[in-house]
Image (cartoon, rainbow over all chains, first blue to last red; front, top):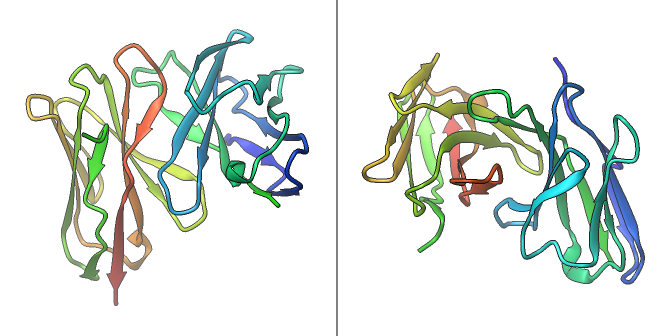
Length: 115
Length: 110
């Protein structure tokens, strides 16, 4: 069964450093998403991406964040200058909007720890 | 009012029990509805989409009441492996972003 993959599984970084989180969405999917979940809190939407551009972003997704699809398979989230409060699980998801309900499938996540 | 509201639980039930979770959502224009399950420190996994007429998948039954903006999930014959957090999720009126509830924790005991 096709699945979303993410690397690394755990990233530890110093405050102020840049991090890039990587995702390989399901191959025939066209919509890609990033969500985050701070420990003990609910899952929050960050950004959606379609046709090589951002289609929607939340208030969390400020100028420190960017997304890119550098090639035909990878989808990345970059945080330019990490803050302590960026520590969270970051989930990538993908969907095929051709399906009736646009069901989204999540990767296993990257645990980001900012020290 | 929270966008998606759920009873946090935990619901502690014996194996074989029937358990029901409820959820309310605030945006009446929401179009798509889902139940996901999340195991500790893992990703949300799609359990089932919720259709307007209600739908069943094995031991799981989901219902949607648009007038009351209410979604439910019924689990029959609970298994130990059903222990998890169940997330009520809605998708916006003109948006594909998912809006998650905080989840209801289920513990199934032997």
